[in-house]
Image 1: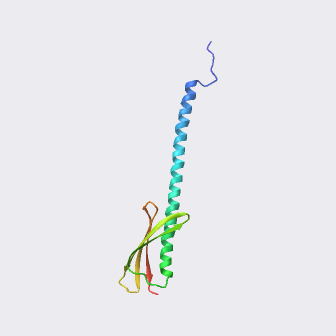
Image 2 (image 1 turned 45 degrees about the horizontal axis):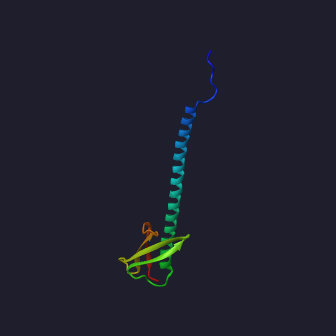
Image 3 (image 1 turned 90 degrees about the vertical axis):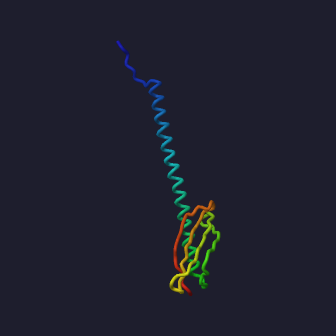
Length: 120
């Protein structure tokens, strides 16, 4: 009579471990991707705040902004950003159009905003 086996063979265990390794590798890659996308989203969110803050600063000052380009550096949320504005006249001489771009330390544009500033 043949004896019945109650345990796994070495080959079955090795195949199961290989499958587990593949699944875990895919899961870790997915987690890493989600984490990096969350970090990028946070950086873009901070850049949008920089653009909104810059437009608010222009609106709050008592000076009508000059036309042409302007730029500066600012830190927001522990990150360094560079903002660039391009101020243009409008058909109404009481308003100026302001195009704002925000770049990260590598020079990649993360946010842009268009707004209008009125003469005080």
